[in-house]
Image 1 (tube, rainbow, N blue to C red):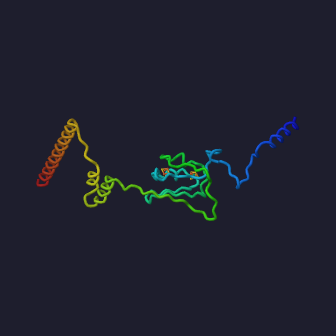
Image 2: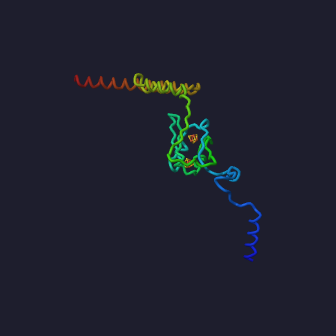
Image 3: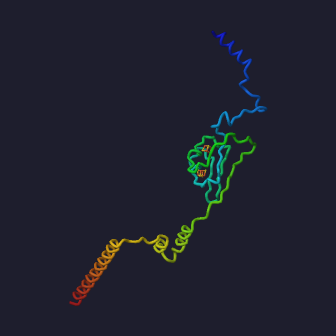
Length: 190
Ligand code: SF4
Ligand code: SF4
C-alpha cells in the first residue's frame, strides 16, 4: 500500500510543475495568494484626525502622535504587525500593506505630517475670556463664554418671586440686627 502511494506521488511530481519557485529570481503573486498578509502599517494621513488612539493601543510603542505639531510617526522596525492599530482607528485610515518594510542597516522612523485646522473662533474667544479673567474676574469670563438661557414666563415668575422673597428676608434680617443693636445700646446707657 505504502509503495503504491509513493509511486503515485513520484509519478505526479514528474508531470506537475514544482511546488517551489526559484526565489529571488522568480516571485509569486503574493497579492493574489495572500491578500490578508500583514506587511507594514499604512496611514491615509488625509483622513487621520491625529486622535492618538493607535498610539494608545500599540503594544510595543511603535506609534507616536503629536497633534500639536501635526505629526504621525511610526517606527516600522519596532512594529510587530499585530494590526491592533488598524482595528481601533476610529477613522479607518490605517491598513496593513502587503509587503514587509525593506531591510536596512540604519533604523529609521517614518513621519507623516498634516496641518491641523486652527481652533474655532468660539474656543479662541473663550481663551481670550480666560486671559482677561485677571482683570474682570472668573465669573465675568464664564458669563462671556456661555450664552444666557431664555426662561419661560413661568420660570421668570418663579425667579421674580424667589428674588422678592430673598430681598424681604434680607430686609427683615437687617431690621432685626438694627433692633438688637438699639437694645444693646439702651442697656449699655442704663
Ligand atoms: S487612530 Fe487613526 S485617526 Fe487616530 S491618530 Fe491613529 S491613524 Fe490617526
Ligand atoms: S501593527 Fe501592532 S505593533 Fe504595529 S504599529 Fe500597529 S499596533 Fe503597533
